[in-house]
Image (cartoon, rainbow, N blue to C red; front, side):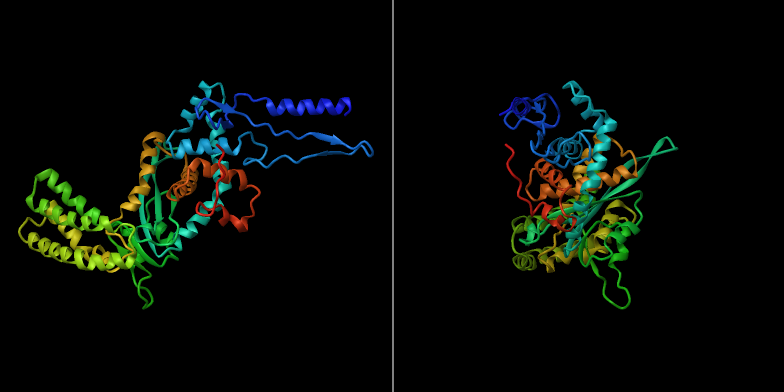
Amino acid sequence: MTRRDRRLENRRRARQSSFSRDPSFSHPDCRAPSSRLSRHNVRPALSCRCCESMVQAPMPSLPIERGLPSAGLLAHVLIAKYCDHLPLYRQSAIYAREGVELERSRLTDWVGKAAALMAPLAEAIGRHVLAGSVLHADDTPVPVLDPGRGTTKTGRLWVYLRDERPHAGQGPPAVLYRYTPDRKGEHPQRELAGFRGHLHADGYGGFDALYEAKGGKPAAVAEVACMAHVRRKFFDEHTETGSPLAADALKRIGRLFDIERPLTGQPAEDRRRIRQAEARPVLDELATFLDAALVRIPGKGDLAKAIRYARSRWTALTRYVDDGRLENSNNAAERAIRPLAIGRRNWMFAGSDAGGERAATIYTIVESAKLNGLDPQAYLRHVLDRIVDHPINRIADLLPWNVTIPDHG
C-alpha cells in the first residue's frame, strides 16, 4: 500500500468513527431528545495508476436536493409538528438550547418541501379511501392568516375516513384530509363526486346534493346520520333544565349504544342479525316516545327542536340496522378530527392556504400510518429515505399497509 493509499484509508476510518452533535439522528440506545448523531457519507475518490482516471461512489439521494436534513431529521420535525403539536418556533428554540441553530424559516421550508415530496403518497391514500363503499366525513374550522387585513379568516379541514375493522372487513383503514378556504358545499361535493356507497355525516347541508337522485337514477350516496349528535342535543337540554323527558330519551338512546359495543369487530351479517333482533324494537319504542313527547311540550323549546332533529332524520338514523357495515354514529370521524383540534390549540393558526394544504397532506400520511399500527416517525423516515428514487408508478409500495419497516434500534 502506497503512502497515498494509507493516508486515504486513515482518513476514511477517521470519518467513520467521528460523530458530532447534530440534529440528524437520535442515538438508538439512548433515546434522549438531546442526544444526536450526525451521519457522514464517506465516498473515497480512487484513481487508476494506468490511465489516471478518477472514480467515486455517487452521493446518496437526499429528501431535499442539496439540503442538509436527513430523512430522520425531517421525520422528527414533521412528527413534532403534526403529531406532538409543537409549532416550528418552539422546535427552533428547543434545537437552540441544544446548540443547533435551525431558524423557523428553514424548518418551514423543510416542511413545505417534504409535503410536496410526499404529496403523491397522500393522493394514493386518498384514492384508496374514496374507493371504499362506506365513509365517515366531518370538518373542523382552521384559523388562517389573511394578508392585508391584519387578522385571520376561517378555513376548513375536512376528513374522509375509511375503516372496515368494526365489521371485520378486509380493506386496510385510512383517512384523507383536505383543506379548503371556506365551508361551501361545493368542496365535499367535488371530493365525493365519484363516490358510491354510504356516507356517515352530520346534518351539514353541503352534503345534501350527494343524497339526491339524478336523471331518473337512484342517489349514488346514501346518508347515514349520527345518533351521537341526537344524544348530544338531549344531553345539553337535560344539563340545562333537568328535563325528565330528556333524561328518558337519553336512557333509551343509551340502550342502543349498549347493543353496539359487543358488535365491534364482528362480521357484518352477524351485526345485522343482532341489530334486527335487539336494536329495532328499541328504535321503534324511541320513535313512539318522541312523537308522544312532542305534543306535550312547547313547540319552540330546545327539547322540541331536539325531537324534530331526530325525527326528521329517522330514515338515515336507522339505516344502520339493515346493513352490518354501517355504524350508528359518526364518532370515528370525530376521532379523526381530534388531532387537528389539539394541534390548533398550540399552533393557533395556519400561515396561509398553502400551509393548510400542507397540513392536510401530512395529516393524511401520519394518521393513516397510526390507523395501521405503525410508528408514524419510523414510517415517515422510511418513506422519506426512499421516495426520491421510488418509481411514481409504484407509489402503492409505500402505502402504510404495504411497507415493512426495518428496525433501526
